[in-house]
Image: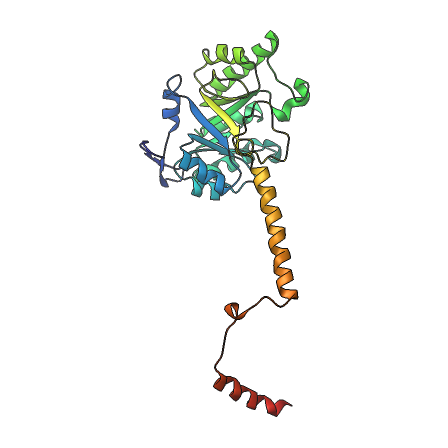
Length: 282
């Protein structure tokens, strides 16, 4: 991460670290700099994000969150918590505090109960919300399709964002809404708006690493730009893996492996001594 001055920060457990951004930095950057956020699922992706200078990373269970934090220690890191796993707001907050102690910078709570979100704010835990098309709420919005294509839907998006403002959020993921609606809304909120499929008129752009890299098990969504074809590379690697195993088996069967290069030798004197010792067992 070149040409970026890192700031010293403390976790809620007072563990010191360095970060590319604090929450205040992000808020102060609204309208001044386009930011990038990537959803990562493993250490390799996290390392690549930090090396590439990606501004924000985000992940959620079952990804190895502790290892991701350690792999990208200087990148602002948001972690999602599935509120369905928590029967009470106290349980959800306990999980959030554990993540903050781990060195996480922010919590993603897009599908949380509003009372849960208010409770989160009482602990001064930074968080971002989620509006527009929210996958877990797709049954209420008509399925897997964009949201906000009517004035009524657009009004709900803005109302949801205003609620998040009042609850104390620093940012909001805005998923699959019309670009023109995104432009209007971005001018009416002090939150950092993070667009995924909502056009360029937001403060940050968000994509999943698997879509960028072309290694998703699902059909790539319309809004995602694919920059590499890892699925093809992985398929080629698997073909090469099978060929290598086949060649190994063939070498074993035909006694081409192991050769002297891969075995351990012993002097003739020592082997003869051992053979004499073996006579007592015959």
